[in-house]
Image: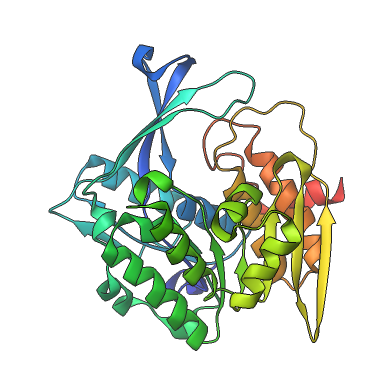
Length: 324
């Protein structure tokens, strides 16, 4: 990225909570783990890093504690090239932490969070005052941020509305975290409302079923199109992905099978990788089918390494994969 680009306001914005993640070095229950590797975790900052690696100028809005973990997160993101101008240091609250099992055979790892009362939970609409919306081309939101607190929920709604008002496109990944919500009903109501503020909604199939009460990808997509979304991309896991959206007065649908991988190492972050691929393709004017294909490709890269964002490709790596 050029010096001028670094000084200009970000063209893409993500926001939410990043945490310092400690992954057990050996497989087995967390209670028996004695050594850990420190990494970076957080769905929205995974997407920020992935889009930055593809050459976009991406900003990330959040709050971190005035502690060593907050410093680690800030420096890790800046090292990746993410624009850190919207990262706020909160002297009164700590940075969130999580601990993750090392699993065998690609099984979903057990994760334990220590994030209650974290700096990011104090995110609020006043934090949006510093954003240069005139430069913004795209906003990516997740369903994790509005689960952190009432004020973070209000910020999410405000950012999505303001981005649309300024002509930016908006993507929304529900990223269900039921334990963060006061009830399943509140979770469904809130996330379905927010999905209606997005251009592109990206639920997993299980998430879509829980949120809409519908079973098939087509019916789930139609539920969100009826709420105002322009396109719905449903992640089908190893089976691939499905798209349904408006093209003029007609509805267009397509499905692309998943990309096989030799060995699944860590499934966490696969959905964020998919979002990076699909969103970048749509921003580049590629077809929905091409967006699904790229999403599947980047998601497959993400599951083949330990860590949430370590497998996200650079533009050169992506081009090599797409040309293979």
